[in-house]
Image: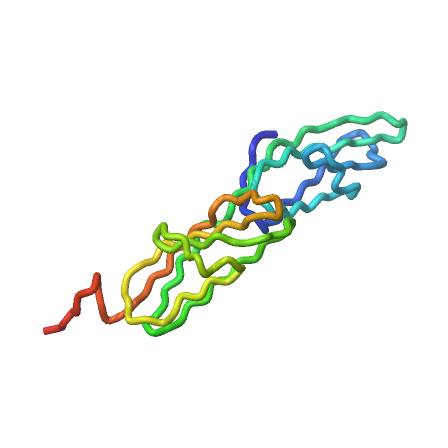
Length: 168
């Protein structure tokens, strides 16, 4: 029992061993909904959030015991950091599951990219150097936006903060 933590897309497996009791049936429950009746339950959450996990154990006499496994905290993976050589076009694409998306909101260094409302953001090739802080959120059909997913794109080029760097 207790709180466990994984990232979206990871799988966590659960099983129960009972001494001196024959278990005829299992019910693995996630947030009050039966998800599996197998001896072993592998859970791969697609969305971040807190999941309450328990199992009902049914014996041959019809008795049931409920075992509270605990809370599973699911978070997004750590931000992605991409390093790009200058003069390379960057195309960033997001994929959302379990919700119908009406639009996306992309920002670069805190400024909304008005022309990017789809799942892909194109950053044209340039001779820039440095980092861009990029965020994206998905807006569902009811107009509710997800939390921002954030990452950094590093451009490795001939300039550093707009200045030429000369070797000696």
